[in-house]
Image (cartoon, rainbow, N blue to C red; front, top):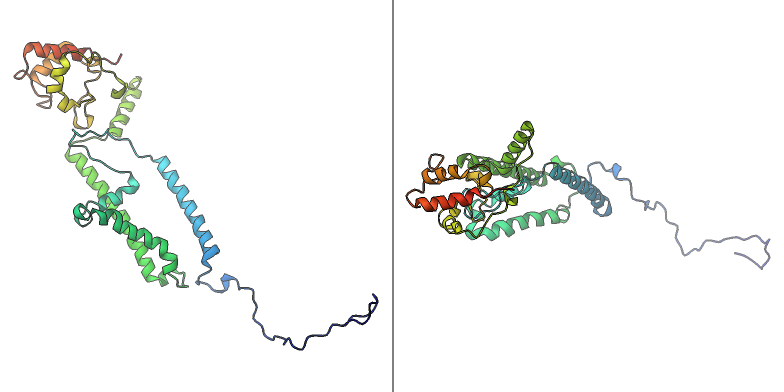
Length: 289
């Protein structure tokens, strides 16, 4: 201790006898995790930060895949088309197939749409708190690893079954997907040096107040659609722009005797010659220009 107030006086520090010197005190600095191979580490922030980085990489890859292979546009929804097959995007095919099974559909639809997916995603969120084991090697965590492998197998299986069933239905109904038809038309147009045809939706209806519309509504629009856009997937042509591809005489022949082996029925028994001429005259005016 110091005596006096002189600045050059020697200062002697005396230890407090009440404070016992600790011998062999453990090092308070946590050891490096490499000292424990295969063991766990702190969930926050170490493990959580790594999970976020992996999640970002997976999300970016997923977005690149969806942009590189966009879901093709299908035919517009048509309640009069019984052959229409609704399909979700490819990354929802597994859930689409899952909901076809009777024990998660019908009276049990809430179980399939809310119950089982809720349990699956809830378990995924609670996994860090439920699985508190220190072991990190997957082959020493049989329960967690088995659940993960089973989930991946289920996703791949349901997706494949759903897509195979869709292709089977297309073949059975002789339906060609619209994006295939569009690609084929574009290829043919490019080979012939022509421009793509104007979309049916952009072709206006000419003289929509003509009395022939009453006959069309009663006889034709149940197949050709109330919007007169037809249904190419079932081979039903559009009435919009039909005057560009058929003359009045050809239209009279088609309406009178039918076409395509019954695909287009004959109306000579249900319509008079004057009515057929009236309808053919109106259809011949339906041109894109």
